[in-house]
Length: 409
Image (cartoon, rainbow, N blue to C red):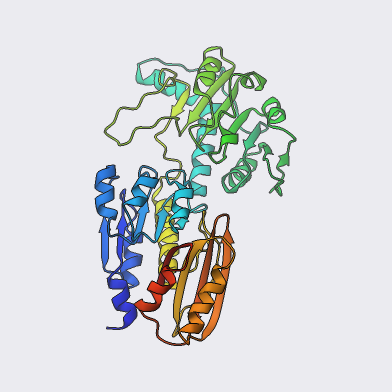
């Protein structure tokens, strides 16, 4: 058995929350043998026990990786979020432990865009309300409040990977598309940027939100600005639960200011399928409520399984950190032949010189070296032309400011 095979056999990979079978299979195909899969999120105590000797963990949105969890996972080398968001991980704490966090920012964007498109068409025809009435034995055959999508204006708040795809899909139906983003974005198709969110509210028949969760996006739609919406507007949120102030939406629905809504994300969500879902929006027949399933298609989960697993495997095998959200971005050539040493440290002067001084003292010739920094940490990757050993690794760990170091064979 080669040293590389021995190295991989010692690595423990934990995959939680019923990730797509693509993920464990990719690890197996690459020679990893210690793979533990769980079909749900674990309690904090269970998670600490499982991660006590784990090197890599894959999660979805229900598993919270906090500073406390990280303190109980001394061997953890990287975290894979098999979803778009990473707010379930304390990114700063992970970085301070020298642990990069990877996600899948693009793999389920089509699924979210298609869900929003379908909800738009149902809401603009008044289907949810008529469907609910029919289930109660009522026959609401009327054209009142029912419209075609063609010629209507779709307003997209957050013109990223989901927003751009949604805009193109909407244009294919004959809709006018406007968008607002805090960054200057090149529009696709015939979409037009507007100068402010307030301007978008005033023009759009349908307003849909596709923004990340940040302090700046909390309650973007609220009691103060919801009155700026066009009369009988439709509101859709498939981004983050904190983006819409729910009581403000409830009031607008009661007053018929908003003709309908679709909400896929909520400020507080059940922790499992067995927990009761509670929301002030439940009484409204003209509101589509879905359980955070914007990216929950078989196609999206398969793509996510591949994308994040490949990033973790690449980091494990090669040291490359492209795609990490909290870590220096280092693209590395294929690791073949030479020994490669990875060193994560606090970003302060003199660390690189101490690393190279150690190699010089040990008569180790450096064949290639890569350095990148990100906020408060630095990441140095060094290829050497002779066999390394645990002695060198231990000496690297003694360099002041070291957070983590490891050898790739």
